[in-house]
Image 1 (tube, rainbow, N blue to C red):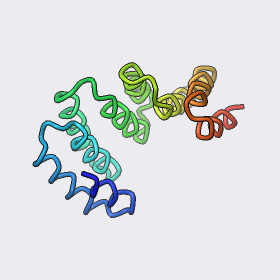
Image 2 (cartoon, rainbow, N blue to C red):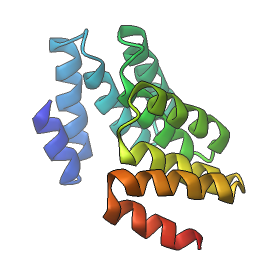
Image 3 (cartoon, one colour):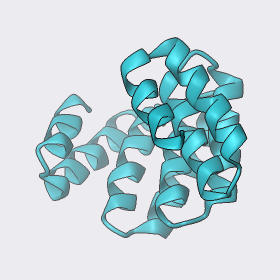
Length: 141
């Protein structure tokens, strides 16, 4: 699965997708394999396929926060901000110690016009990750 991640970071999404297909075959009970494949599918515009893989990951392990976080990213990118907000909130309930979850939920709040709630999440992100969170807080002031 690491090779798929590296290929994705290098922008070789077709090769990355092939690697994640193999990962799903080899480890069909690993939600992360489905989540990584779904992430690539979503970025390639294969939204329905991505949503199916996110659902598969959640069926395997409904407590895996990454499933909700990455599905939230897909929903955010497709301008489904309310649904993205729900996914980010679920990721936070499952794993409340990840700055990126708060930062992304803050972005969803901001898109929904909830600036005060966005700022609250950005400040929480700062408490975990000063640099990334600080840059977002400055954007809302």
